[in-house]
Amino acid sequence: MVQREKINNAGISDAEMNQTKMSDNGNEQIQDADIIKLSHELTYRRFLLSDGKIRSFFQKLTIPEYLALHIINDSEMEEDSGKTYLTGIAEKMQRTVRQTSHMVKALQERGMIAWSHDGDGSAGTYVSITQEGRKMLAEEEDVLKEFYGSVFAKFGKDSLMELLQLMKQLESIMSAEFKAMEGNEV
Image (tube, rainbow, N blue to C red; front, side, top):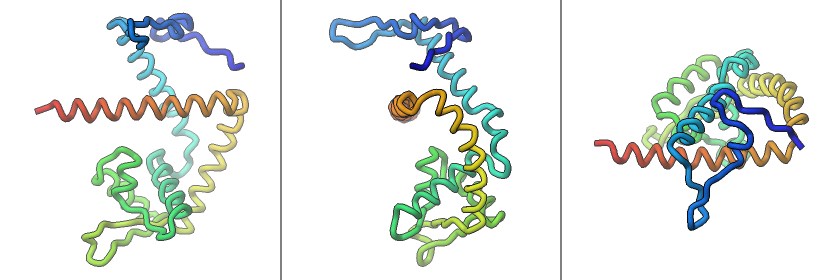
């Protein structure tokens, strides 16, 4: 079993992390002070995961470029058409089409993707990964595989799968909350 690290940054102990307050219907009730501590801790942990230490593993791509190439490559492997639309990439990366377009243009200029459109372009633009893009993706994956292989071996596959599932659930709830907040703004 993986030993959990003491959470000192936000002043939250393992016991506090495991402790929940139940209401009459069995749902967790979190006090305002706990919300502040937990939101800080979540922000801190997300910062550590996305900090420059991970970026330093990427030799020739940024993290968003790597993710975009991965999305395009996976999409081409799964679909018969081999077309990955710009809107699909933007949606998966939770970025605007404009931001995605700038990134894709940079990848195109470096010869990693080919950018095309159906007919007159009104149906949307799509991209496909080039041999250079596949080569670059493979190089970056080799570096990540070496680092994460060791990390995952120590953390455990079951723990990692559980963590990823919980992260997906959290991200889904957070996305819904962002949309709800945006809908309430006038």
